[in-house]
Amino acid sequence: MGLDDKIRNSSEKGLGSAKEETGKLLGENDLEREGQRDQASAETKQAGEKLKDAAADAGENIKHAGEKLKDSFTKD
Image (cartoon, rainbow, N blue to C red):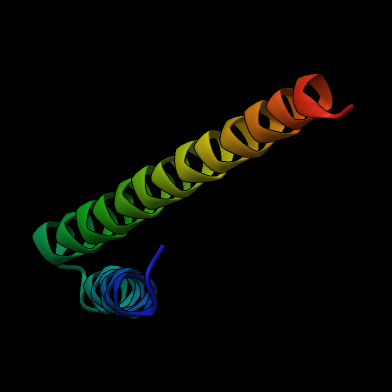
């Protein structure tokens, strides 16, 4: 996950939390729910970014394993 994505998602989650708490304090159910939705959205984006990073790491690991396997067959 890129740093800009981490910052953006963290900011969205923090703002969502602030909205939720403000909604609770003011008795504004709509604002509270909006804050909860913002937090859920940020968490979903974070999960997607982590999955994307894991897939890239797995691809690199497979590539390196293939190279090692190839090298083991080409050694004399």
